[in-house]
Length: 204
Ligand SMILES: Cc1cc2nc3c(=O)[nH]c(=O)nc-3n(C[C@H](O)[C@H](O)[C@H](O)COP(=O)(O)O)c2cc1C
Image 1 (cartoon, rainbow, N blue to C red):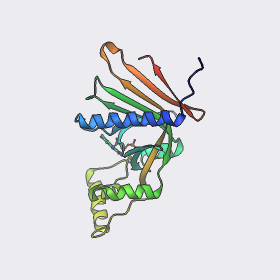
Image 2 (cartoon, rainbow, N blue to C red):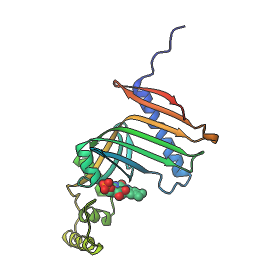
Image 3 (cartoon, rainbow, N blue to C red):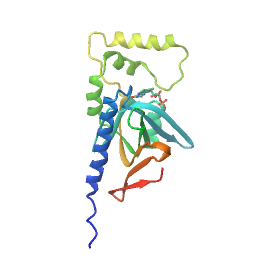
Image 4 (cartoon, rainbow, N blue to C red):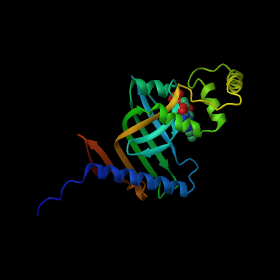
């Protein structure tokens, strides 16, 4: 009997994205308080940094989030444009973890503008006022900056600051970890190699 034809690489990627979307919607339905929260890991030479950001969309291009481009993560991603993401949904089954690794690209100015326009005015002003990741002497200094931008944009729409926008993580590796009793967890891995996707399992 001849071997089955290789799966279409994009079909496997679609399958991984569909699995991700289904799990995210299950986590939302299960009442997870922050289902889109994901740990984002970046590097800077020998320094490795991790923090939580919110997922703001997934499509074939990848996983999107928004931040300050001058923050630690923004500078790190400009210099070393690779990242890992990690979701953990405790409310699903015996716990589900999704890990994503890939190259990172900034979103276009138009894409960042479009998302910025949907944010609450307070968040828009915060994006102007916060020198994210830089030392802050006291909270009054931040409040003074907020008051200044509030006055500057009084009665007008708040434009996107040039130092604020989105990134997309373009997956090269997506792993679904399904918790099970006795640590007999199931790990399903999708990896892109030489331009095509393959699927396999890992020991827990
Ligand atoms: C639940 C949660 C969601 C967050 N979402 C974002 C986000 O979407 N974008 C962002 O820049 N920071 C977000 N933060 C703050 C980051 O964790 C981090 O403190 C900040 O971005 C500065 O990180 P950096 O100094 O490594 O650049 C979030 C924090 C939490 C706890």
